[in-house]
Length: 99
Image (cartoon, rainbow, N blue to C red; front, top):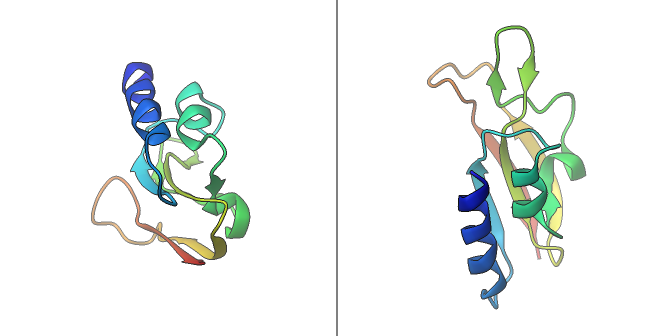
């Protein structure tokens, strides 16, 4: 995962446009992968989420391992996760953004 994150980061540096990055990092917000993929972007859950922001249930606790990151030029209006939606082992997330 670290190698993939480094490839991704190199590609991100070449982008000249505002970024929105959505993905299943399979890592907590305390991980190397999270910190480096997020970089200076906004974590939409941290900006507008509530509760745990659960995107996955491990055996004994809710976890947030799926993320939406937004460029600092964007305003994060809302963030929601849907742990009641049982169609996968991961739960959907959505963020509302504006320029």
